[in-house]
Each structure stands twice: as structure tokens, then as C-alpha cells.
Amino acid sequence: MEESLERYSRQIRFSPIGEKGQKDLASKSVLIVGVGALGTVLANHLVRAGVGLVRIVDRDYVEMSNLQRQMLFDEQDVEDSLPKAVAAERKLKAINSSVTIEAFVTDVTVATLPELLKGIDLVLDGTDNFRTRFLLNDMCFKQGIPFAYGGAVSARGMSAMFIPNQTPCLRCFISHGEGNGQTCDTIGVISPVVDIVASYQVIEVLKYLVGDHQALRGTLKSFDVWRNHQFDLKMDTPKSDCPTCQKKEYPALMDEEDHITTLCGRETVQIQRKEKIDLKVWSNRLGGIAEIQVTPFLLRVQLKEGERLVLFPDGRVLVQGTEDLTRAKSLYSKYMGG
Image (cartoon, rainbow, N blue to C red; front, side, top):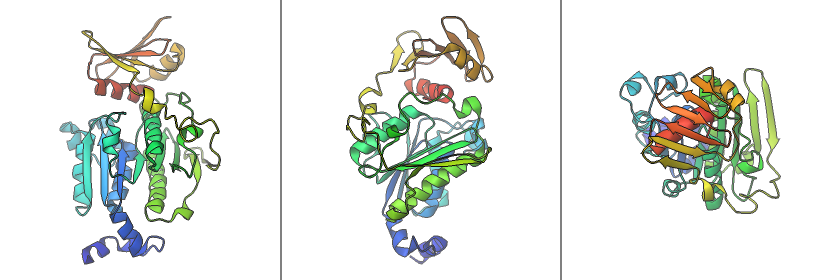
């Protein structure tokens, strides 16, 4: 107990937490989905803060380009081709052995998410695509679990705490299909904005977990740290026709798996987007980071990883060079934003 008091002494001296709040944190369990830029910062803060169980999940491996902003990884992890969840688990256990760290190397889908959510008090978004975010949003609202949303790209960030039966949900502010396809891999990202977004997420999470709910911000915060812009949108009125928090239809739980198919014998995975694809727009987005060939009928993209993307105007995307669904979805999310 003395060791615990010493470890968290500065946090306990912060009166909104105190000894009671510290005990509350030790009794809580959180799930962090995605252990990349946002996820590593989220996990680092929550493990150091003494949250009792931190469950992390990610489907990818550590790459050299991750090291610029993903704070739990190093060059040895790249050399060893460690899964991000495994590498993060090792670092986190060395940081705080008194908390429980559970790591899962898997894809987050309608099928896998219910098991990952067992015993969880709150979910944190460390993902990089809106398909997974809508899945988390819908599942969390269906099960009554708070969802701490965060996103970072370029120098821009957004964060919000969505609480079932208390606040609107993510769909009330961002409709499916509104994502502009911009990702860290296409337009870049600077490390400070990642830290800021994750810190805003963790601050709200700590308020919630220690029971100081009246201190919750209650806004969708967006900002651009390079251009010095900041805006808070109040989260007091849900969309009356929201299919998730108002109609309780949870569309991501019904169609999330229908868009992806392995083309037998062709070493190709097909992903069907709900939105049409403007070949000119996507050739401009991807032309600076990959070798492309565009025709009136399709856009072919040779990726540095070795695989190829083929984009069609009707919304189809072929990931050529793999039959691994997880690998295909990872590349799709990396270059097209999910």
C-alpha cells in the first residue's frame, strides 16, 4: 500500500481524484482499440495512472514509419517485426507491474468485439478509420458502454466523450460516408497533435472513471494546432433520426462484414465501399506517395509494401497480392481511411 501511495502520490494530491478516486481507478477496466499513434499515448497515460485493467487490441505490426509518433515502440520492435499489441504490452508491463495488461493481436469486427468488451467499463478510440469507429460507437451504445472518441491527422484533431443515454453519439455529428479519405499515410501527421488529442481523451476518461461527471467537458472539440484554430461544439441535442442513439438500429452491427470478399484463386481481396470513387480525386491523393496508373475505368496503385490497390468508380477496391483479410483491411485503412 505504501508503494502504491508513493507511486500515485502526485495524482492523489490532485483533489478531484484523491485517495478515493485512485481506488476507483484501480477497480476499473478499459479497452483501447488501436495501439498506434493515439493508442500508445492513451495506454501510457492510463497504465501510469493506475487503471486496474488495460486491454489493448491491434491487428498491425511495428514499422519504421511508426517511430516518429508511436511512443511505446523502438527500432528493435521494427527489426523483430513485433505486433503492436505485443510490443506495447511489454513496454507497459515494465512501466507499471501493478496493473493488468491484456494484449490481443486481432482485427476488431462484429464477431470479435463482444468478447473484447467483456468486463469493460469504458472504450477508448485509438483507431485511424471511421468504419471501425462507427462499429465501436454502435456496439458501445447498444451495450451501454461510454466511448471516448479521438482522431488526429495532419495538424488537426478531434475528441469527444460519448455516453449512452446521456449524450448524442458519434453518428449525430459525423454521418457514415462523410470521411474525406485523408489519413496519416496520405497527408501526414505531426506528433504533437497526437499527444494533444490523446490527452484530451484521457482527461475525460479520468473524470468519468473517478465519478466526477459534472466536470465532463460535454463538447466535441476540434482544433488545428498549426493554424491555431479551436472550436467546441456542444453535445446537448442528438439528431432526431440518428439510427444509433435514437432509433436503436445500430447499422454498423448489421453490415460491417458484408463489404469484404476474398476472390478465390486470384490472391485478391475485394472491398466494396458504400461511396462512389472519384478516380481523379484519389489519383491526386495517392500520387505523391505511391506509383499510380489511371485510366477512365480504374486507378491502379502500387504500394511500397508490395501489394496493389485497384480502385473502381462504383466503389470497389481490390487489394491484390494477398488473400489475408486482416492484411487487406489494414492496407485499405492505411491508404483510404477505412
